[in-house]
Amino acid sequence: MKKWLFIIVFAAVLLLAGIWIGRTDSSYPFMRWFSQNPWGYRMGNMMQGNRLYLNDQVTSSENIGNQTARSLRQAKIDRGKSTITYSHNQVNLIIQSGTGKNDGKFVIDNMANPTIYIPENAFVTLQFDNQDKDVPHGFEVTTAVPPYDQMAMMDGAAVGNSIIPPLPEAHNQQYPVGQTAFRFNRPGQYYYICQYPGHAAKGMYGKMIVE
Ligand SMILES: [Cu+2]
Image 1: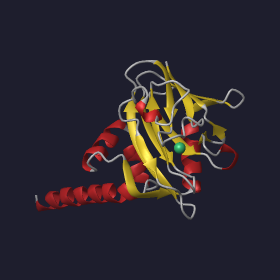
Image 2: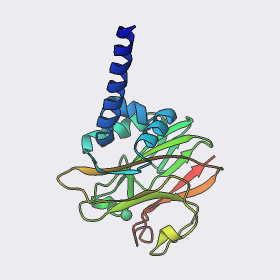
Image 3: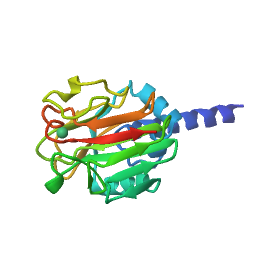
Image 4: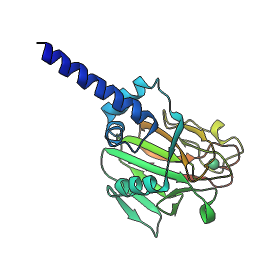
């Protein structure tokens, strides 16, 4: 009897420790699995008090590369048309702010502002990383269509929970990370934009098609 109690308490402590560590390290394998399935995401969200962005969370280009490769294994890519098509009902998007020739754009695996196809009713988990050393960047999916004005976040309606508030600039090749998850209520054409003032107006947006 006592032995069982000990095992249960021990398991609970391990689980809580895993969640706690995972809060600040998205490369921690348990947390990665945990945050990438709907049940785990909701649990994590509940325990973290619904914080969309963890101030102290950063990642490396190696992590981003691995996560992007894993994500794109589930997608069909057409580089000529710059489209990424997902067909599973669980979609894990890994998106960065661009640098160099892709400065002021969103980037997935060197594609600038790709058009992303997502199945209707898919549960979308999203990780956005700011690789830009000079400017904050954010992310949201909106019903507003381009061209955008300075305050693009005031146009149209954001898809619930798709918003990642602007993340601070990158330092020492450590990239701030924002994570969230959402579902589309209805099929249609959406846009993902950077809501930092002026960025969407200058072309930091891409199309998201839900069908
Ligand atoms: Cu931006």
